[in-house]
Length: 310
Figure (tube, helix red, strand yellow):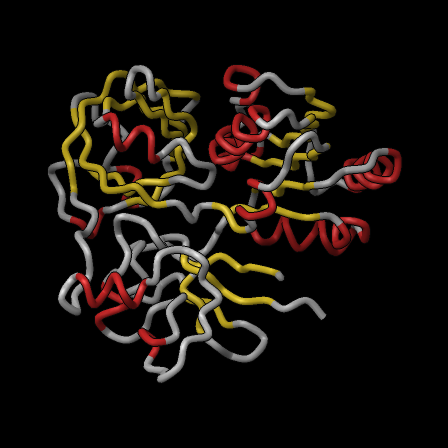
C-alpha cells in the first residue's frame, strides 16, 4: 500500500509558520503538533526552526487590499468575469494552478468574504481574472460593483492533487469540466501547456451555460455535452480505452466526481487532479468549515492540506 500523508500548501512560504504553529496544530511539522521527535518528512526549510527564529510566533498574515476593477463583464444572468489590477508580486504568486483569493465588496466586513479561483494572471500587466457565479447572499453583494473590490490572498489550495499536475511533462491529459469549474481548469491547462503536455477537453457548460475555454485556452475540445448522461460516460470510457492518458482533471461538484469514478473504472488507475469543493471560509485552517476526516478519523483542514503519496 502506498504511504500517504498530508502536507500543508503554505509550508515554506512567506506565510509559514502560521497561526496553527502557535496552537501546536501545524499540518506538516511534528514538533509543532506537540511531538518530541521529528518525523515530518518535509524537505524544505525547517518549519520549527523558522518558528523559533520568529520568536515562537507566526510570520506575517495575508492582508486585505483594495484593488481597482478594470472590467466587469457579465455572461448571462448569473456569471461575471472581473479583471482586477493587483500588485506585481501578487499577480506572480497567483499564476500557480489552484490559486484563489477572497473577494468582497468594500462596503461589507469579512463575513462576506468569498473564495474565488483565479482564471488567469497576466504578470506583464499585473491583471488577474476571476469568474464569479451569482447564486447566494455573498455573491449577490458583488454583482453590481464596478469600481473597487477588497481582496485577500494569495491562497493556493483550490485544487487537490497539485503534485500530480506539476510533475506532468510531455504527457497526455484529459480534462472533464463542468460549469464554473472552467475557471480553475483554465489556469491548470495553461500551466500544463507550458510543460509541453497534450490536453483533450470534454466540457459541460452546466448552469452557467457558457464556454470560457474557447476564449482563454488553445486545446482540443473533444465533446461539449452533459457529463451526467450515459452517452457521455460511454464516450469517456471509449476515449480512455483508446488513448494512454497520464492525468485526468475533474472540475465540478463532488457528486459529479463520484458519478464519474463510479462509472469509469479506469479513472482509478490514472493520476488525478480535482477541484477542492469543500466549504472554505477563512483559508487559514482556523474556522473548521473545510474539515473532512480521513480513514483513520483524523480531521483534515482542506483549505491548506494536500495529500502526498510516496
